[in-house]
Length: 145
Image (cartoon, helix red, strand yellow):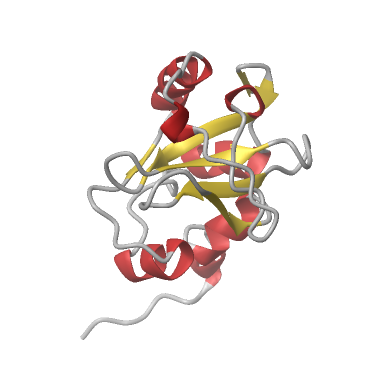
């Protein structure tokens, strides 16, 4: 599946289809993004299409960040990225396809603004770190007494 001409990673479409792409534990969100989440939203397929249609037309430079050699990338290119959701108001996170079209890294816009920070090398790593990978579903069920 493509959005804005970019391929969605299979692991993401599978997580959405299996309804795992929602409601990560708050402690996992804090650990991954190093921010206090406020009204987190992980986009479903319809929201991905809508948000990224708007993202291509975004004009506010506050959302683009600025290049940072010390903490790369610092910035983002709407034409080479897909928004995945929000950690809170004006705190999007996204797939960044500039390094790899096949395995985009995951960035988020720091709450201080104007700096995009890498939080995962790819979507699989993000899913695992947010405890949404589904790997723990293989564990035996605990008996409730």
